[in-house]
Length: 618
Image (cartoon, rainbow, N blue to C red; front, side, top):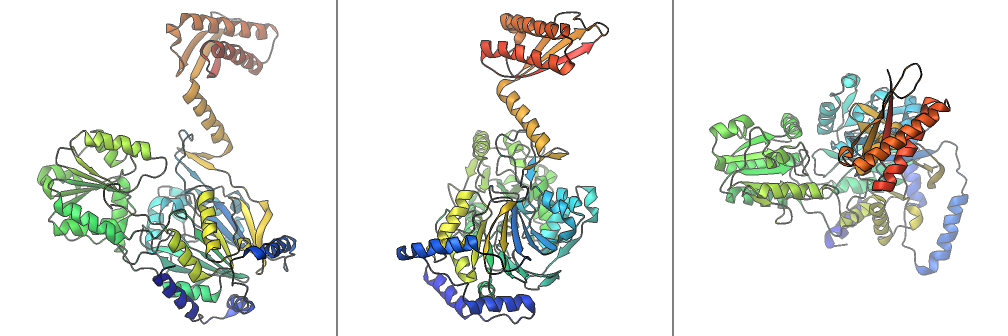
């Protein structure tokens, strides 16, 4: 730990206890008196004792049937679709409700949302949905899930609620949504549970962590965060408040793990702002900046720099326009008068060297503004030598190829392309190792549940906790669908699980099992193609009127391969006639056709396409 971290720890040790009343606070005080939240790093001579402790935990009988349950529904085996449930008695609250963008192999899928089967079966218990911030991996599932749960109240900061409202109202059924704005540091009751929001620094303003105070102990969820002492918008984290929470007592800390494998501290937004200001001041021609539309602090700074250099800013991209509109209305983006202009005026009335275009597309998304610009398909923007393009982001895993291809197209126009590999034009919104350790020191939780990330990220978070003194038995590496139970003394994974399947969104369709089959068919067609065989038969006798007609897609052009074509026709006709003579049912006939033709194709071209027999009675 550095000197600053040591100073923070001293503040944590001296932080006064928050005045409180009721069973929750009393429980917290009992925990502090018992000394059970203190932990020490095990030495080699203690290994046997720790093994005995672990066995004792396994054999421990909970002192009450009324247990506290924490259930990660999604977000623990991927980066995205974050959703967790806290249940006590007949009351449940959820934390976040996000989506995940499709992985390679999810052909045709728009996105994936959490499996809320357990919540739907117990929707009378769902008293509130608590949202930490406005990114889609935390709010993107609401539009689908809210109607299923009977529209429980949704809580969040002003910006978070503004972004939720814009997102969910695309589904008219969500007009019934009960959206409630909360203030940091002002607790409110949800049944027997007390909820309090606290401010966190993240790449989107108005982000929060959440404390859920239960009769058995306090649960703290970090949300997405980093410790930024010079953020683009808002104040840095309130360390005294975090230390106060630690002094109050934390039964379990659900801490994000996205950057747990990365050493050091996350770079401040101030450094990015300095770089962007320098680029804008020195650029001779037009500047096009592509970034995430949720980076409102960065957008606000770009508008200030544009004003300083007498440039106008033009917005392109639907999500960018929507988020700028929300940010301006709520005061997180404050454009100087006259700086924001409508895009259609860009080419007509304003010189290029006095223009900045702020757009979407930093990830090379197919329909994004910058990608359409690179293809020469944008309605209002044509690139020319002298333009400077800034990709103010890092490629998300899986998008690298698309970003490189887009950059290649952009460079062919003779423009200058600046990325984070050249200078600091982007920084993460997630805490690195030293920040994660500092948070653990401030909160001193009795148990750590690493969340928000793939297993290797969460395992790295576990290693950091052990490094600063937590015992391995105090860290629970859960999976989606696990049930973590506690009686206020012990916390452990249950042998039971709740459903945690991927729920695919494909256009207007939603599902798990049937869309999995659809994706499998798409995968087969992508790799092996499809063959369509049409049989024209007499409607009275069922006999073939003519030889079957065969066509294929994505395999070979059969008409240019007469030998393969004739063998397929022969196999198809024999299969049909043999099963017809045996008076086999229609499905059995089709199965035999698929088997016979599939065998020929495998022998001749080593492919296994989808084969679709169609029998037409005439």
